[in-house]
Image (cartoon, rainbow, N blue to C red):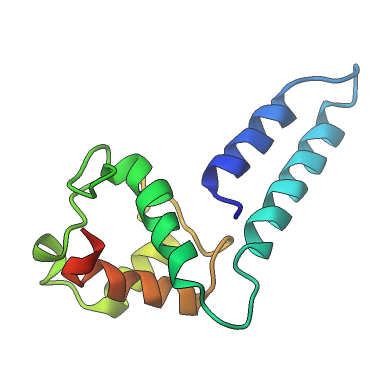
Length: 127
């Protein structure tokens, strides 16, 4: 499964210059590869709950803490989020929060996947 870490690796590779004048080309190739890898992991017709759980705990957890209790980003445990509507959380997941570290995930996951993640976070099972 491709994840944000795969994209970060691709972007790091894009920064290294392979030949004078070719940096832009390397960046385009690395970024295109990262996007293809990331989107292909979620391109199936049906949702893969296990893959989405891994995404939450590994990728979201990289900022929100591996136990989702907070870190760079706020606490994502159900008891903290209970006053939020699933639609609001879905919007935050897809569009991020401007001027914060919360990135938009719309380029990487579908509306349906973001809705699943929002519902998952609102259940205590996510902990």
